[in-house]
Image (spheres, rainbow, N blue to C red):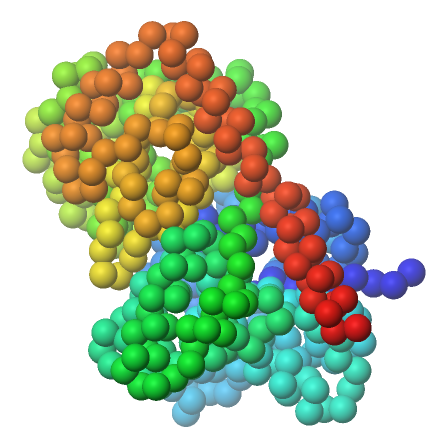
Length: 425
């Protein structure tokens, strides 16, 4: 039997990020589609811990199915190599995987530096003269554009911006996680072309396709309601007794606006606000909450694991993610919002920032970004819905969110790979 391999190069668990979860979902879906060797190649745990990235508790990370291997290559070289040692380890391991003759799909999520590792590994593998049967896929996510390409263009760092875009285009299949992400990529490429006479925009316009993040819809739709009740009791919460935020604690997520809005909301006066997540803005948010008029009703949870997340979502009276555009990050989809719509519970309140509209469709209450007064009004609105209205919204939102199922997303990617192979033949 011919082995089929999928290699995903990504910042994987325990990193708190929707695209880490997406990598897991693509890996699991690949098993369902007949891949018998699925590998996630990522960073050593000590590197992730030193990076400052928000991380889940290690004992709360769900296991992968048999058939999925997680590899964390160690560094190459010693202290005399000030940086790049871990990237060298990552690239080297990919070279080994690409030269054993096994037909392989290699997909990088986050272009920097994973796409570089993949393209370098392919080039090196081919230079060995050993059999190489690799098709490469690169998926651009939000931070690739806002934190790397846009920053490089704005700083007129031509070489850095060109490196990211050229490496992206070296892949066989180029994907963006939303139409918004694709638009931003083209806009930044056009700016680079205008300044320096490069020709990235027409190439990107022709080749970049949209592939929404892959989500394990079944794990959110089908959950044990009695387990939800037990989890809430464990946290000292009651069903429909709290407003929930669950994501990274960063300025772009708008938690500061939510705390202010929660204090203003009349309908939320008898409820708690649960802020679940970790991140760089954590200390400032704790201080803001402690000084607020609702200090005794705001709860921070920094140890929510994969299993508990669905129960917190299912039990909330409302879910708010009031994301706002920031120079360092703009929400390019909104995976947590889709997960919440699948889990049930109270209505979603969010903003029209970036690609959020593609995630929620018409199934969320949209407020202006950075507007605590409007956010307070939205809380008043959704917290006073009748049970019938709430149930109708819940079912409609879940139906909308089913389209992002991981198997559907992977099948669409495989269709693009198959179309490419037909063209090559």
